[in-house]
Length: 88
Image (cartoon, rainbow, N blue to C red):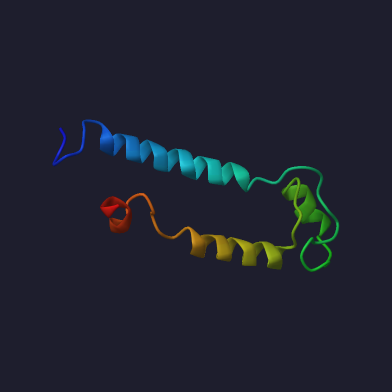
């Protein structure tokens, strides 16, 4: 059932694209490589327990928390569903 000028399946296509974007973003944030003993950002020690728990870790807990907070702020809006993107 389509509404307005949208073709059948347009809403599902938009949902699928949003899910694909979210999966791609999550994969890009996965740690790769060997864990570091010193944080890349602040040169602080990364505890052995953290290195064992999170393979490929490159940041200490403080720097990782700050990064995740920054990332959450930048991805808080749905750009595909925003009114602006629909008007273009």
